[in-house]
Length: 176
Image (cartoon, rainbow, N blue to C red; front, side):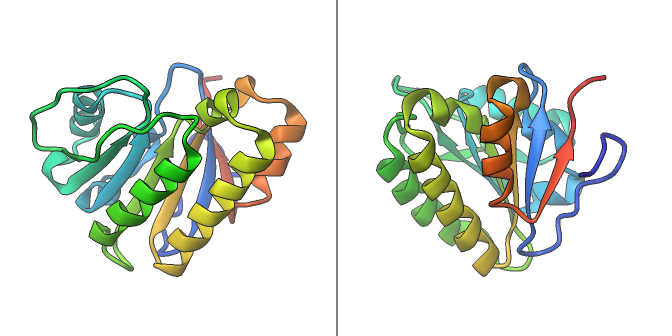
């Protein structure tokens, strides 16, 4: 497990589970190179995702967002977005992910799933594990780095270990 001061390894195809604080975003853990071609799944509104990317020094016009929310959203800005998907709709999420990943460059791009724990509030752990296994495998096959943010205190140690087994690496970015 990588500690807070160690940079994330964004080698093409590498998939990393990142433990973040309950109010933190996995986007904040990404190095600058990730923002050259980034796809984000996040429960945050597109305007907030845009601001987080810009705070990290990224150009939002080079990034995409799949809003993970059951409410309608209105957004006009540089970040390209898909239609929102409810966190309980794992099939719809996987479909949007598959289409959006066509815009992420193999060998260069980055995929960031911010707020994995939200899925566990709406779907069975087995179903979430299958979805994340599918996403991590597809992202790895496309040679795209993947970062999956999880508020560690929101899940049991058993659930964490089960999810961590899907990924190549883990990192802890929680405040000390």
